[in-house]
Image 1 (cartoon, rainbow, N blue to C red):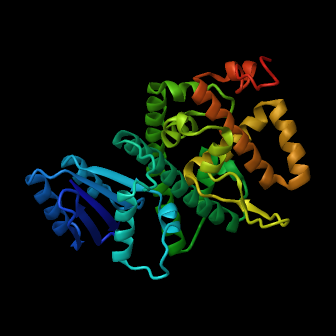
Image 2: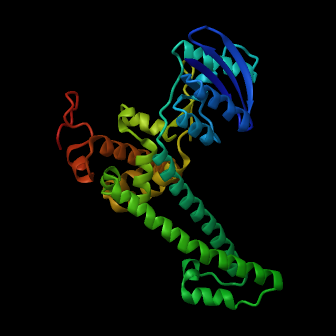
Image 3: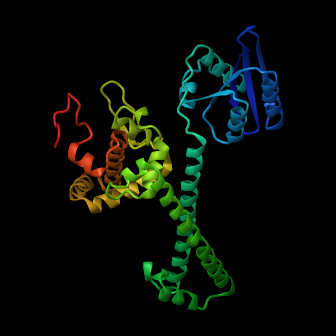
Length: 350
């Protein structure tokens, strides 16, 4: 069997590999994609079993598909954990590959959970809709600026039939007219695309039992529920709600030493899309539930609205986690509480 430590780059990869039968250690630099594909396919033709370890990074989907096709085992490790195990102050591609190989041989490789291909593909649907909505928002903001420059201030009414007629009726210069026409054409193209993507997301959420349960929570729609299920994956990976909040980057960064304790802004180390959706959904939940609204305004008066919004997003993420882990809908979790049935629970059944 070949154990391969791979320092992956978009244009090439530096590998250090050892044959477990002979103990022979070799190093190579493989250019992408031709040279690397040739090397691994030759191993497959020879009937050699291989285990490849690499840091988590982007732009490696083709490489993962290649190894899956050849039935080679792929370990993807936490890049920060691997970096923390580096002893030398010199850093080169060769040393990085040797470090990964050494961790794999010592059975100390910090392997992380990797979603399957179907999960990744559905994530692309969510990201595609999110980027389309962002593009549409930028276009709408530019058209609002055009209207404001002509003295028309009607906010959302600008997108109704009467508002659009007023916008198109303005007498502008040649290039300003061209800009207005192009922006309106782009807006007309994006809106049907976004509506189609939204409908597809609703259909995918309907197929997923976990997403259907999460949608019963006030303020949580198909987009947020499906994104939560796809990005969290298996709820059993986490032991408590604090780990969920940390995973999503909704906990404050900390730099403490001795008696000095310093808390900073939230870490933002998790998935940016899900964190954005949770903040948006939490604001809808605040408007829907009186107890959430009371908690939000209490925090807003003490710490400000921005911090209050993030705090409510963290609360929502933890509640969705327990709904997902217990396989309960909102009514069940609201009645029994997330810790019902545990011996140390003081609250018991409500």
